[in-house]
Length: 158
Image (tube, rainbow, N blue to C red; front, top):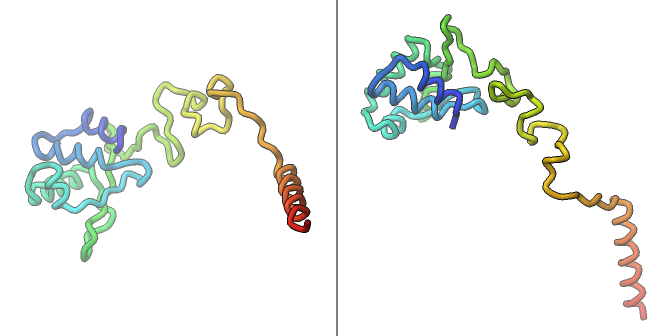
C-alpha cells in the first residue's frame, strides 16, 4: 500500500462518489517500488470498489483525460492495461512525493540521519539492543575444525 498516493487522493482528488472511490483504491495500490505503476483488471477493481466494470472504465478514462492517470501500455490478450498514478501539482505536473527519484524517501521534516537504521550505513550506539560479541575469524574456526578432525582420526586409528 502507498501512504503518499493515498494521502494525495484524500487531499487533492477532484472526484466524488464512485470516481473518488476508484481514485482512492488506485492510490492505495500505487507504490514507489513499482514506480507508481498499476496493472489491475477492470473487473477486479470493480469488485474492490463495489461498482460496475463500466463505471471503472469511465472513471479511468476521465482520470487519464484529467491527467491523474497516465496510460503506459494498452491491454492485450489476458494482460490488463498498465497505468501510472500521477501526482499533479498546481501546474499540472507529475510530481512524485518528496521529489525523490529512486532510493528511500525521507518523511517531511526528518533529516536523512533520522531515517530508519535499515537505510543508514551506521547504527547509533543507543539503537543496539545488546552488546555484540565479536565473531571469531574464519581462520580460527578452520583451525578448530582441523584439530577436531585430527583428534577423530587418531581415535579411529587405535
